[in-house]
Length: 275
Image: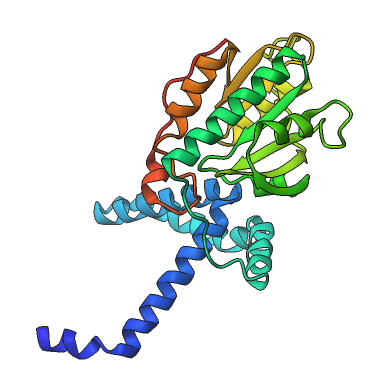
C-alpha cells in the first residue's frame, strides 16, 4: 500500500498540486476583499450541514439540501458575477502577490497618527467618516471613490477631510497601513430605531457596519463628538485614550497585511458598547 502511494508522488504531481493550491488560495484572497466572502461562508456552512446529514442518514434534510444545491449551481455564477469579473481583472493587472503585514512599530505609529488626526478634526468640528477594513473586504465601496494608496498620516487625513477638499464628503478607507481610497460612498442604514439627531455620516457608518465587520470612526460636524461604529452599534463621546485603546484592542492581533487565514474567519468580535 505504501509503495503505491510513493508511486503516485512524482515531481509532476507535486508541482500540479502546488499550483492548484496556490491558485485556489489567491482566488480566496481576492474574494475576501469583497462582500462575497459572506456568501462563501454561507455556502461552506451548507456543505458542512449536507455532509453531516448524509453521515447521520437524515433523509428529509438530505433531500432538501439536494434540491437547494441544484438552485445554487444556477444562482452562484449570477450572484458572484461582479466578484468573478474583478478577480479576472486583478489577475490581468498582475495583482498576484499579497501584501505584507505591519510590524508592531508601524502599527503603533499608524494608531497614533489616526488619534492625532481625530483630535485636531474634532477640535475644529470637521466631519469625519473613516473606515478601517478588517476581515470583510471593502473593495466594492473603495471602487466608488478615488484610489489614494498612501501611508496613514495625520496631515493626510486632515487634508482629505478639510471642508473645501474635493473628497471631504465621502468616506476614507484604510486597508492595512495605507489610506486605500477616499471620497467613497457607503450604504445608509435603514434601521428605523436610529435617533433622528444622527446625521448622514452616522447613518452611513451604521449602514456599513451592518453588512461588514469594519471599524468606523465618525466625527460630528455639529458637535465635534468622536464616535466608533461596529456591527450596528455606536460608542460615542470618545477621547484620545479611549479611541487609542479601542484601536489597539481591535487591531493589535489582527492580520493587517491582508493575508488569508481561516482562523480570522472564525474570530468573533468582542462585546461592543451601545450608545
